[in-house]
Image 1: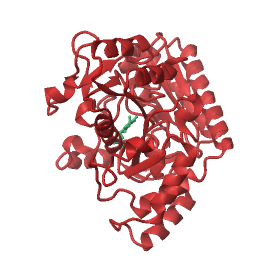
Image 2 (image 1 turned 180 degrees about the horizontal axis):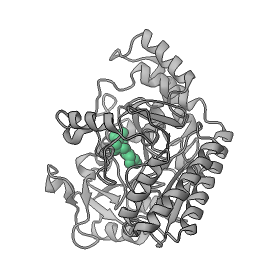
Image 3 (image 1 turned 180 degrees about the vertical axis):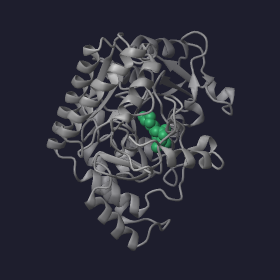
Image 4 (image 1 turned 120 degrees about the vertical axis):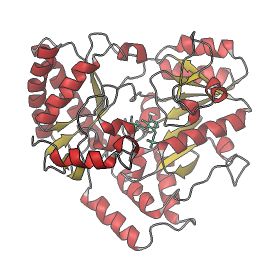
Length: 431
Ligand code: KE4
């Protein structure tokens, strides 16, 4: 790998205009050290930085690119759409086409509202849930991320059933106090919150397959338990499928586990790499949203024709063979990483679910945030840079998901495993 000379210069310039030199914190490499690589272009499973280094990419824009970078058909489709106008601020048939396609894939989404990010989707879904139940509190899970809405930037206060406290300055304490924290895969922790706060919880919000503490799959019966608890206590169940939607399966996690949420939040793949989010669910709930009902939510670029075109292109290509290939290659990579670690005596737990996975540098099985936090982040940083030096661009943080795409081939995975064998030798030397 050539030294990132141009990236370093751009990063110095970037920090004079962008806070921390980036437009989203994880991109700054603070969790792994070093200079973030500025990307010039990408195609398929490969990205190229401004210094001419090419990498096999497992960030893939953090999930939207199920079909790889810049598929030719998608580029053609969005170019044609743009020539007809990039945004009208008026209804188009494209929004209906994509909405009906989403509903066909996720029948629980009887109504849908398009927005421009996953954050907007989850913020709006919680507002609707509060309006529908006339309750204020929400339950989220430690280690799950739902975007940067005030009510989600919360950690547990002292004691498991007390009120949340902000994790970020600028979040008012009363807002944080309306968020209660539970433990992922621990249904008892949710029951305790309902018992401690009877009649006040509007919704339980969950990543049905967690990706933001690293990948953690739901334990058997966990999602079904949440469904039963929410129903019993008159709260709504909100699935944040921003990552898992159309990735875990064409019908998302709800399509795999057979659990029907009241509301679902979507992002990433739904926009095919363009800024699209969406929330939706039961018609009786969503018809509370303006202008059908009184719950206000709006957006200048919501449903714009170019992004809708990209989403339609992406959701038109979700064949069963795609998911079989993604799962096979995901399993191949997970096994290869585990074997590379074992060969060097490095403690590693690899959690994988279809086309997402996370190598945790710990010998503790990772099933929630506390166990994820046992991972050796220094070891991950060494591994990350060892992979980068060998042509593999992994997520620059231990607590993120690696993403495969339709563009990743067996050869890409085999190259990645070879790189991991070398990177694990470097980890073994430093731990
Ligand atoms: P956006 O506002 O970033 O589109 O979506 C927020 C969001 C909501 N829900 C889930 C489950 C998510 O994973 C996300 C965003 N994911 C992160 C990756 N961990 C985006 C990357 C970033 O923050 O730059």
